Length: 304
Ligand SMILES: NC(=O)c1ccc[n+]([C@@H]2O[C@H](COP(=O)([O-])OP(=O)(O)OC[C@H]3O[C@@H](n4cnc5c(N)ncnc54)[C@H](OP(=O)(O)O)[C@@H]3O)[C@@H](O)[C@H]2O)c1
Image (cartoon, rainbow, N blue to C red):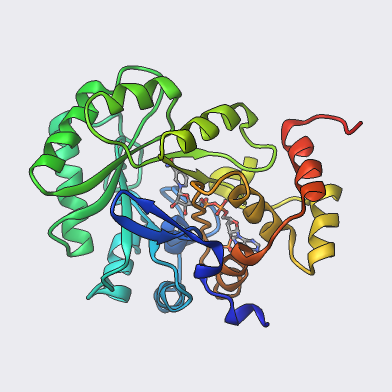
């Protein structure tokens, strides 16, 4: 089977409460610029290419797209591109957005939003996406302070029907417990990947036990973060990739999906070929031996 024939359905499905999604989704952060994301001086992407990547993603069965109003470059907005490419939206498409510390009109980061400002951010996402409700909204958090007031504000917007489901991002297990005492939480979105934040292993497992999706970001970019993928893959990842006729990036994605049925991938790309490869990674099945090697690498342990 050629890569182009593998759809996101090959990765299996997970339910964010009543919303079923294929486990391979798409992150929209890379669509708005070439090179590093979230920079005030970012080089805007080609608009037609970004739109065609989004349409191709949906053709390939992607029905979970992660976005934010603060994903923009001087000339492109991820939400506006999603609206232009995909509205009227397919019934099964789940668009997850996030609110919290936003970016000013010139791209500079702003401090944590107040509860009133969070409502404004939800309305901004509604306007840009052209919807009357948001499927899933993540509260993005910086630091370890209480999130009760801010999450409570989003819970009220959920009660009012502007938001279907709530998630949290960049958080600790304590944040999850705090949020769950206020309203149901369908997902946790944290940085995670092979060799990236192994200290979240236990949190990832605990999310699964509670039926909460764990959605890693930077699973490919790793420590490259906003700058993106780069550098050379480790020998262990390359050996597994060779054995499957796959790429190191595909192995990184497949490994995250093997961490549990509740793990949802949201790889980001502005490149149509990379999109096809990332969707196909959902069909990779790694053996117990391969997983053991990659798990050791993840935890930075020497093999016995
Ligand atoms: N909650 C948060 O705080 C937070 C923070 C960051 C990101 N996110 C979300 O998470 C999503 C994923 O993060 P991300 O987009 O930064 O990182 P990622 O998916 O880990 O990696 C993206 C980087 O890898 C490259 N890439 C993607 N597919 C590739 C392939 N098949 N082969 C080679 N290179 C490939 C991309 O470049 P090309 O464009 O050239 O393919 C880009 O440099 C974001 O899009 C965003 O929706 C959330």
